[in-house]
Image (cartoon, rainbow, N blue to C red):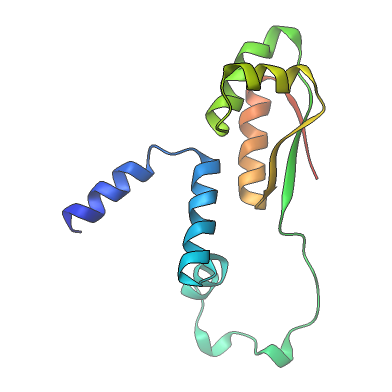
Length: 131
């Protein structure tokens, strides 16, 4: 790889999940591509991909909200730290968010981001649901 791509890769290693999700959305909008199609197509032989005529209409939910339901008093500091690492919220905003639960932490994110966010917040001690 070139030095420039190495530098970009190093910078990407330092961003949060939410920032990575937003970056993917910006790339999709800027270049008019769909990352989900690119990922699935790269692992599949194009000759076996179903044609548009073969597809059945099955809508699968693609955007999820991560909601903090409850935060035990003893776990508040850990949850605040985790919320701050997952979002762009400051200390006061993160504290206010967990004190007024139930609250949405991440809105309209992919299933993978929602699952990872849930895992991290539950490890910190919060009770989480995904809708």
